[in-house]
Length: 297
Image (cartoon, rainbow, N blue to C red; front, side, top):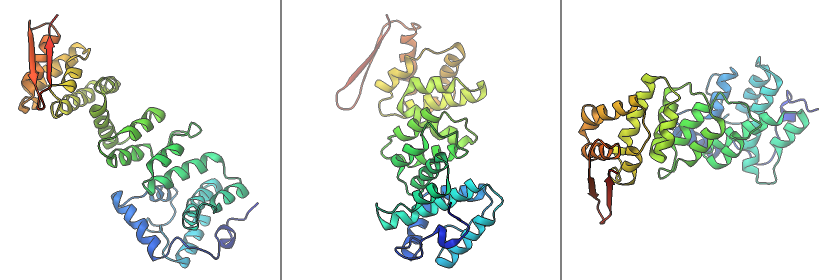
């Protein structure tokens, strides 16, 4: 079995090196895009390794210092090997597809597969390779991650063109219990902009005071949508609401913040027709000539 406490046994002593000036600059650019915190930073902090400024190591001497700090840390060997595995993924990256340094360390040291899957996923997150990251982080072999909230936050914030398929896929696979309000807020926003009925069922899992706030967020997202009096509005007014939700809807549209929206009145009328409180029909035109109707039966 490899003795990873020996620097030369853990790291190659020749060949392409990931922590030169160019490599360090690239990593710092990724860090900046994540508001100054990479996932490896979170791992090192959780394991109490270094002072928060040890990655990336700037030169071989800094790498030797980090290696010593890893080996001297008071955590399990599996955790130490996990950090070394992550660092070797950096080496593999600059050496090309045939480099298998991280995998060789894992095999020779007996690092469990779950640790490898997690660290590969976090490494891809730190490189903003989100599709590859989810192939690992949403793997069924992984237990719930303590970084689930941060993964959700990163995926929603970096969604391209309002495509929230990746954060929603991660959520539906992992079903994390949110610890951070920001993660809940961002995930629900993604749900509300993607699927109105799914967002409604999602918010019903929370206590009333949170549930009402989320419900109003849902209504607000519909009112702000270009198709608020079209398909999106019809989705909202057709929801099977409880009596409490119905009151929240009416209060928000007629007396709350929703009243300020130009779409509040037509959406209110659409709901009244759908629920039978008003007889007749309403027709709303949109730019481009599309027409949408709501009719009481």
